[in-house]
Image (cartoon, rainbow, N blue to C red; front, side, top):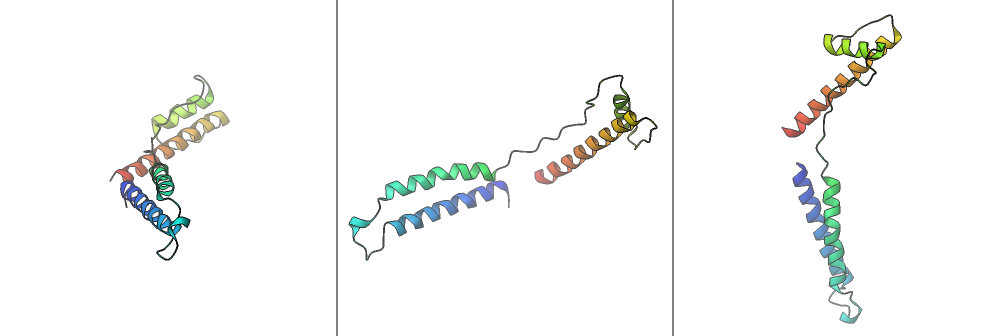
Length: 124
């Protein structure tokens, strides 16, 4: 079911429930009309709730952020990030900062790839 279909189903359900609540609160044919609640008080509340539900049911499209080197240029972290981004392979380094830069690049690349796959599935 698409997001639009879900939203329409929810809105239809709200309107049906609102109509049923109005009928129930207005009483049955057996109750005197003087004890019934006015319909105009109930229906607007139900209709006003519909846009709120629609906003909750319709998520914003996901934006994928490409990997970006967050480290200060000239640092070991920066060099490790650039190395991993350029070579596309896991690196093993004797420098802790270089290795951490490599690991950050790999983590960002993995998250970006996973995001692209999710967005592609949603759009197809």
